[in-house]
Length: 406
Ligand SMILES: [Zn+2]
Image (cartoon, rainbow, N blue to C red; front, top):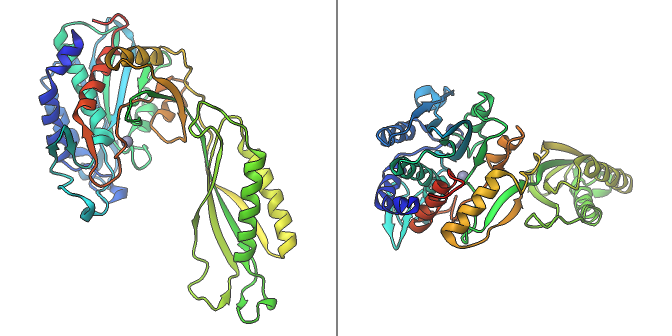
């Protein structure tokens, strides 16, 4: 059986993970050299797996080692070669953060109690190694998958995806009828398939007042006080007005969070003349950014009149979420069946606050499903991957290739 084949590769998977994590792959934006060394390692590692095709799609980036950000696509030809199943994971990792919080060397992985500790073992090393060994198991089984079966290792996921998945989308690799899985989000139970995301909007709010000495405040207009009044009032009104719920999302509502606050002045003894803060908003599809801005502007007008300051909200960054992946699309159905077969559970379909590679696939009108089984230790000190999750997720990926399970 195919799943037994995967199981027999368990030790090799652990070895591959340990060797891969030793090679740093941090984006230049985050102070690293990029992914080229790790990509070269992976190309070599899979060179004798028996793929029908292994291709590199490098994106130029003079800041990175080798001048490129590498992307690897390794393919097994299917019975039907008109369509493809893609499993997309990323090679890059975030930096280690506060090294004193780590119990082990983040780039010298330690295997302990059924876990592998190291930076990038969970995000996204687990899915990368799992997909690679799912493919190896398929090749060794001698069965051709229903469609082309491609495992994709992309660069630059943690810092915007311009040189990674966006580069591949631009090259036209992905077609309307393809099936795409992005295993870069999940829960410990492995029972959530993400098919939708919220729209992300960041709004910058600037309040202009009049600076003066704080012992004679009546001669100025306090921008901080006016901005704070606006924050409290608009926050309340946004939550009241945009209160619809969409149960597929966790949480089921649009969220409006005041987050960043810029420093207005270094000294304490002046009434600030200008003040800036930001909202991070995640909107369910029922809510639209134009309506949100309309409300923000009308509250701004009112607070400006009441305080004498001028409150100006403006869109800082905005991304309308792509259309959700249909719950009955073939990729979702196959994924559900495979998860049920391997883990004996019925996964539910969910939406999240946004932000995986899957968005760029969905913008092309191609259905993409996001799923993996993880303890959610990513981006933290002592990040780890559970070896059982590594192996069981690989079984699920292998079964995805076949509508009739071998
Ligand atoms: Zn990730």
